[in-house]
Amino acid sequence: MACVVAGVPWHRSKPKAGARYQRTMAEHQVLFCPFCRESFEGRGSCPDHELTLVSFDQLRPDDGAHEPDDELDEARSALPVDDRRLALLDPRYGRGLVAVGALFDLLALVLRPLELPSADPPRTYQLAHAIPSLGTLMLVAFTVFFALSRRRTPRALRSLRVLLPLLALVSPATLIWAFIRLGGSNGHPLGGAVYAVLVSSLLLLFGGLRLGVTKARP
Image (tube, rainbow, N blue to C red; front, side, top):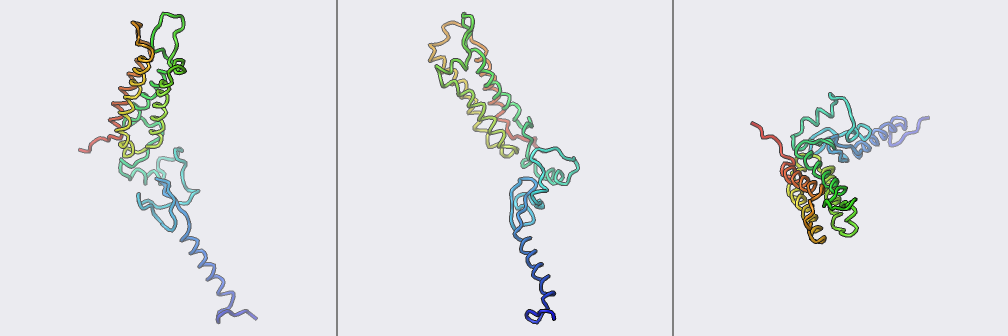
């Protein structure tokens, strides 16, 4: 004899409970935007980018290679240029100039600030033991690399157009302070570190002013 619950056979009421459970789980499922990779619960599309949300296992690797006709590529290309995420090593929008400028700051550390008549004049990183402020050259370089790795859209890059030109002034000021501590050049020719810092400052200045600048539409 079949068991009856509230006038409904047990074998008929059970599927309804299962369907109700599935609907509840679907409403609370966590999905992700394929562009910004933010998670949402109880939504079907991203409120910022209006893209259909996908499950975690459908997310593509952040910088992984995939087919050019992939559905996510089409959705990404439909976004405004200002909001398209750039590859980590993309040199466009002033990023290349700024990155090369940071490399010149690191190069200055292994070059000599002055060409002294001694057989092996000290290099900049060796002088940093006596003048700790010379370590600022490395700090500026890593600050630039960190900022470029975090700001990956033209819109976000434009927020760095004040910081980067200011950083362009830090390295020359550091070198000038080091010369003051050393008592000047005393007539000795300037070394490669000085020229590397000058090139770095120019690249950081001009590259920083161009960060995130897109071509104006006709």
